Length: 94
Image (tube, rainbow, N blue to C red; front, side, top):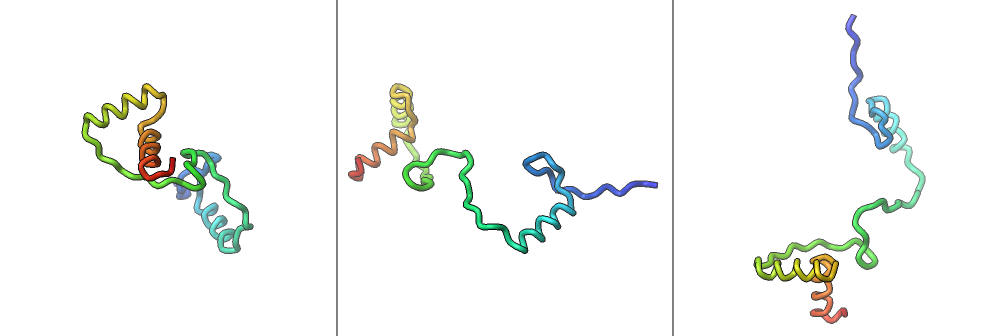
């Protein structure tokens, strides 16, 4: 007699196999509601200022990029830091 393999949906963070039964149990718990617990920030990039930063894309000519990367290495910082500092100075925040 062949056994029927239960459908699974991957693994939880703790390594436990996520089964249909687990999904149904968690869905029922979600419908009842969870206690109001503040979210805790886990990892990721550090904040710049009081909130998450916006990301902008900047196209640079190769010679300007070379100068930027070289200066960042000399100052042991990042090109992003130098660009932020330059924009802050340009707009009068520094």
